[in-house]
Length: 393
Image (cartoon, rainbow, N blue to C red; front, side):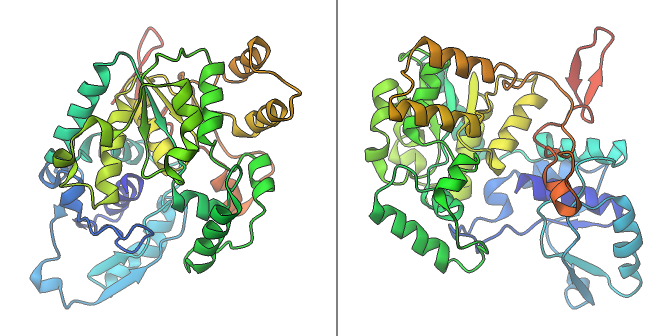
């Protein structure tokens, strides 16, 4: 949501258009009926952008029946595309509806003012609705009462495992259920997935057990408080036993807040995820088990706030080590810890420029291989100071 909305604000600026408050997707896997104002502070959003883009809460009455153009903007497009192919639509249309908002702007080579605007929207204008902000900050306060904590974005929910085809460590019954979900979800286009190949290529989230081994190998003691930023873990407590035994102070929003406090949000996946987002951004260390949209957004947000420590697991390398541990070829201990620590020495969120495309890739694969703009807004959204430090703008 954050990335799509931020990009559409930038597109409105490029097109010199008024932006209507976005409609949120209500047809995804979780069927969340939240409106924009349920998730974000609408008034703050409008005020924050008053000098950049005119924002209206709804389409003016006189334009409700006006000629419209519904467009699927081209992915990873630059300014030229919007000026040359979309802007001419104004000659015959008064309203342009963006059918999709994901990845519709290029990560790189956009004018500096557009890049800075994207950051202002993503990191500042898109403040959560006051009730979410209040409870999110309360969860942070309660989590900090245990001491410095790790926020673990544990992507081990049913939708993630079904979509990715990752069934390692699951029973045959669980694997069959996930396969059935994938086959019957029409908008998921890839149906035939080899789970072993997915895992060996690093395309699967780490399992809760693997995360436990990883955290221990990085040197975190069992007394470290860990916040689980996630929806309902697939298989429930049966898949959490190993992680819980290693890190007994294992918390989540359901443990930190009362049922009464969570009741206004509990039926809305995006609002519950927003609470996790706040606790993750404010954590002492953030570790995602999978590099999905939320993980990238939180990682970028933490960079924007001063490059807070964010450890990104090298899943492809890790599963090879974990398989050796499972087969008895490698024991947990100093040797494993040294190897894991060394491979992650430069994967902890320290300042660096955004990575470009993977060499040899072409077309859409080239854009897809780039590091996402919001995952690492350096250098576009930072000022270089005389002492070579950087501050967000």
